[in-house]
Image (cartoon, rainbow, N blue to C red; front, side, top):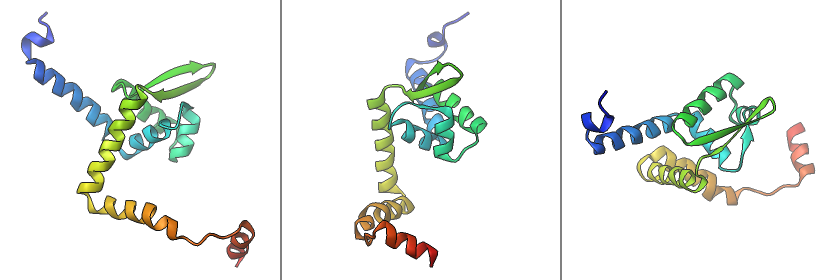
Length: 136
């Protein structure tokens, strides 16, 4: 049996592996799960709830991220906890993706501008006033 390097150039092998990581990043739910894990280790149930996914769907996305070696998992009793594999590198990758999106995609630019820039312009109100507004 020939080794992979004897049939393909080393450069091609590297690009194939990078493509598998990029493919794992290629879904909004997986990006959201990675963003949640950027805040710390969490169990599958909490991740599914935070992302608005079913447990089965969240588990499937997490398995794909694990195969791409973007996350690692530990079983603690009946629960499976996930964490980023290489926090600094994965967070930097997500930040780079965000910057490219902000620069290249007008819709992302608008959302970022509206969410962050206009957020400070929102009117602060008390909890009681908010409750009054909700009832009316």
